[in-house]
Amino acid sequence: MLDPTRFLSDLHDLRRIGVQGSGVIRPAYSAPDIAARDWLAGKIAEAGLTARFDAMGNLFGLAEGPSLLLGSHSDTQPTGGWLDGALGVIAALEIARAARAAGGPAISIVSFQDEEGRFGGTTGSAVWSGLLSLAEADAVKDTDGITLAAARADLGARSGADINPAQFTGYIELHIEQGPTLDAAGEQIGVVTDIVGYREIMVTLSGQQNHAGTTPMALRKDAFQGLSAFNTRLNDRLRNVVTPQSVWTIGHVALSPNAASIVPGQVRFSMQWRDGDDARLGRMQSIIETVLNEIAAEMGLGLEIGGFVGLEPVEMDAGLRARLESAAEAVAPGRWRRMPSGALHDATNVARLMPVAMLFVPSIGGVSHAFEEDTHEADLVAGLRVLAQAAGVQA
Ligand code: GLV
Ligand code: MN
Ligand code: MN
Image 1 (cartoon, rainbow, N blue to C red):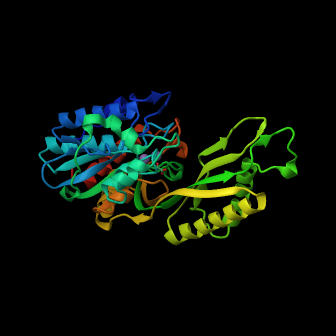
Image 2: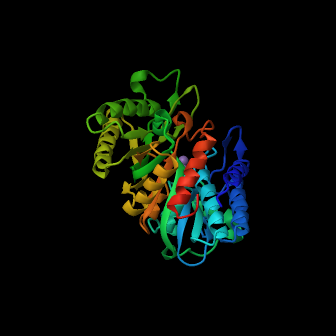
Image 3: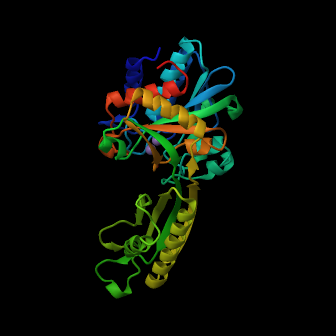
């Protein structure tokens, strides 16, 4: 039988690994991330499933024979919330446990590695799905210059063989919404229709480092002024092609040398954009590249664009979606909706291998990727019940 008290208690136990105030710091391959995976492997074994890590550190809890796969990720953003990823993993654990106690159906679980993109984005599931080779992933560096190969060496003997995706009949991921829609509407469940695509580049603008007191404004080649002008012009130009659902973010900026009395000689920054329409992502990309080239030429700055990563938008599987919709109507009658996902998820990569679907529960105040991230307990349990029912487990 599904046990919501045990589910909430496990969720709080996982939160304690890497807890910081009301949030969690458990980025991929950090000591807390690996400790959380070891804790989960113990829970998987207690539940009577077989715990297996692959070479990336994706952790599976395998049932025997063909099974439905449930899960999400247990790594966090550098300063993350306690539910992003953890909710889907612990709900999967609870449902797999209840299914085993009831003698079926066969449910396997997974916690993917580096969903939060210390090394790009949804890295563990990208490698598992074949989108990225392990060798390509190994070469990627985080913002401190550490390669994924060096980081995953900390998995030590945990690192194991590939997990064959053919044993899974489908994948369903429960997640917090991470946006304001369900909370504002007073609804409990979102059944995801599609997941947006994203593209991301790393940009370097290089000027001339110089004295901040003696260098006349007209003679400066100031990398920060370049970034600032780029951002302002980009916001203006993108207006012609975007919709209210399109988003773009300069989220990481490294200014060099980053000192009050020095005209900055270089800036390196991430430029990320997301949309549900792949063609629009392409139009946004041409505008971004055009504006970067214009600014570099006008301001006499060097320009380097690299580190391209991205995922195409994907639609959820109609059959699995229908199961979620009828479960949502049973558990939360009139308090659910169909909606797109503006956040990225491992489900995008897993869709290369098998039918996938997703459901959301509300995020209080629409806050996520922040310590304040939270969801009412009744909504967490509603999400658990909808997922269980869609998976054919007594809710
Ligand atoms: C993943 O959490 C993302 O949407 O960035
Ligand atoms: Mn997530
Ligand atoms: Mn996230």
